[in-house]
Image (cartoon, rainbow, N blue to C red; front, top):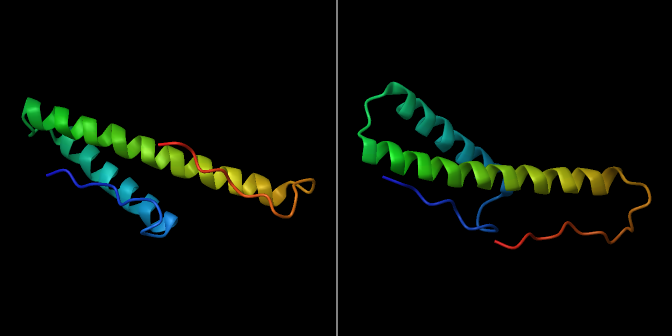
Length: 85
């Protein structure tokens, strides 16, 4: 039932983000439908939290990249950091 989020670097970040967001939206729709058992709802909620965190991390990395591009004082070799997982 639960799909795993692809490891970073194996898919382009935008595709990975969009896939995670799409899966999260599908989980929310299923949960709102009210037809899941309690165990299914809890598993869906847990998966949704993981997807939410993954999407949030992707957005934070994108924001950092934009800030580095817009900051005229940033060194030319500035690289976005890789957060610890």
